[in-house]
Image (cartoon, rainbow over all chains, first blue to last red; front, side, top):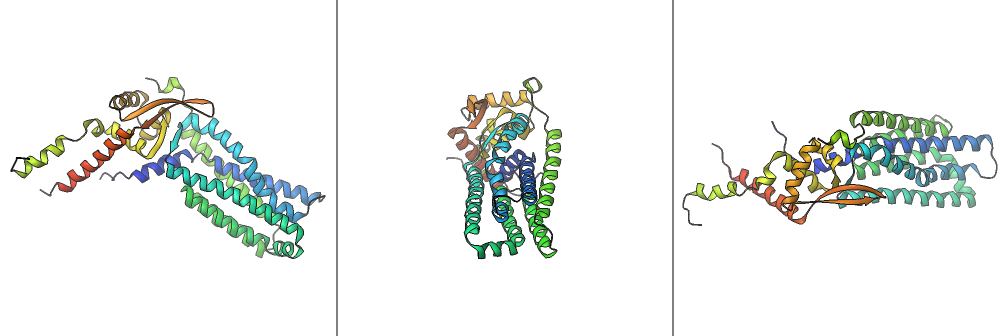
Length: 212
Length: 110
C-alpha cells in the first residue's frame, strides 16, 4: 500500500539528510576532548588560573569560538559537494538560530559563573562539591533542547548519556575529566561512523558524473 | 452550470487537474521545492532520486510555465545554481493539492 505524502516528513527528511554527515558529533566530541586535554594540562601544571575557572570556562569557550568555524568549513568541503546546497524554510532557519542563540547564552552564563566563582568562595565550594551533578543535568537539558529544536533524535541519547556519566562519576567519586573523556570519545566515534556512512552513501558529485 | 446530471459536474474537476504538476517526477520536484526555500541541482537529484538529465528536462518545463525560477547565486563566494518556487508555482501547487483532495473526497465507494 502506498504511504500518504506528508510535506512535514519530506522537509524533515531533507533537513536530516543534510545533517547525517556526523560533523556536528565530531566537532562536539573534539571540543570535549580538547577540554579534557586542557584540564589535564591544568591539573599537571597548576599555575595562574584556579581550577574551577578552567573547569567552567574551557568547554563552552572551545565549543563556541573555535569549533563552529571548523564545522562550517567541513560542511562546505565535505557535505555540500556530495549532497548539494539547499536553503531551508524560514521555520527551520528560526529553529537553527534558536540553537545558535542557545550556545551563545551558555557561553555568557558560563563566563558569568566563572567570574562569580572567582570572587565568591562559598559559590566556588558549592560548585566544587556538586560540579558533576550540575554538568550532568545541564548537559541533559542542552542536548535535549538541541534535539527538540533540530529533530536530531540521537541528541536525546547523548543527553541521557551525559546525565548518566556525570552523575555516576559523582556518586562513584571519579575524577571530573573521566566523564568528559568518555563522552568526548563516544561523540567522536559516533560522528566518525556517521561520516563514513555518509561518504559511502554520497560520493562526491562531479559535473561529468551527473551530466547525461 | 447548466448540466443536470451530477456526473457532468464532476467531470470538469478531473479535466482541470494541472497536468504539468500531475506528472510524478515533476510533482516530486515541486513537493521538495514547496518545503524548501531553494535548492541546487545536486540536492534535488539526491532528494528526488531523478537523474541529472531527467531533472533538467522537468525543471525546464516548470520554468517555462513560470512555476519555478532558476538563478545563479553566490553563497560565501561560491556560485550555485539555485532553484526556487515562484509565487505562481506555489499557488498552482496549493490549487493542485486542494483539487486532488476534493476529488478523492468526492469519489464514493463502488
